[in-house]
Image 1 (spheres, rainbow, N blue to C red):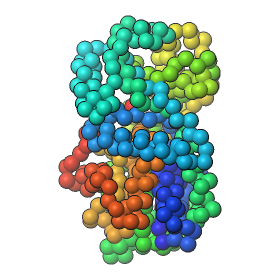
Image 2: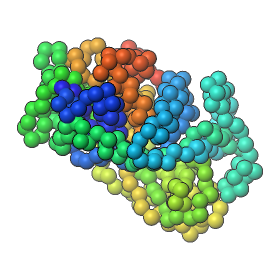
Image 3: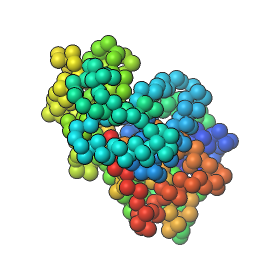
Image 4: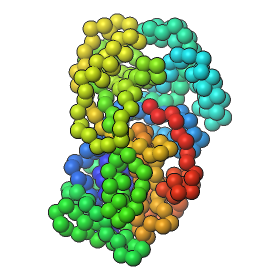
Length: 372
């Protein structure tokens, strides 16, 4: 029996890929605490990008986005995959020098962007100076990916809605999970895909995994005509935003918080900061208001990179796929495939070693600094 803990995008993607390999209800169980996509999977801005700071994440993104594009043609619902670009506003010389180095690095992977005069290309931006445009990046609709997976597998796997309170092990083998209802479910393989809650689950058997919840907020304005195509990032104003196809401006602010679990609410002060930021940068939206907003977690790690696979000192049969530090949704299709290949076929993709939980003990951190 294979047990997957967490029915967010990574748990559902893994289940989907295992079902494609022939697994069904008799040997595959998916456990969800609240509801499908309760955590970060339904609380994000739905963007994809190739452009990271570390070579490990750039290489992963190239593979993952190619697979995302492939999956978008196979899944039941249209994920609205669009190439819209990312646009970084460059405020000072230090930032320009940093992007010059990054552009050279990205160009070595054939994903280089270009420096432009913002006002010449995007007349609606109130900024005199240079920007860096990465035209390969884009957007999608996370719900259509999430529910494509769910409706493809919901009748083909055993679904349990309950909270996993602890893992069960015997000697050096995983044996299953204990639920809040008191029920024990037994299996010889357990995969933790519980996002920000993954470290809590693993700690139940003394495994310390560095995944920490950082609350983030997203805001959506009333709709306007669609004219803001790229995702615009301004580090000075600590803001990022774009538009939905409906015309709503969607985005958030860089609000560093203490790592902890908090209520899923949004703050008035941060909402006002977001409104002031977009009004300061975009022409003709002076009277616009926020229509709604939500909050969720970045599941942060010490090097802002995901944790995949297993550690040699873990109980046999225990795996993890979590800790994506703000870029988990776009990686979910590919991560599910990699994990399914590992679990079903014992095929170890090179990224399993790169993003292994063992890297923290071995001091092989990835050093990803370009978190948005």
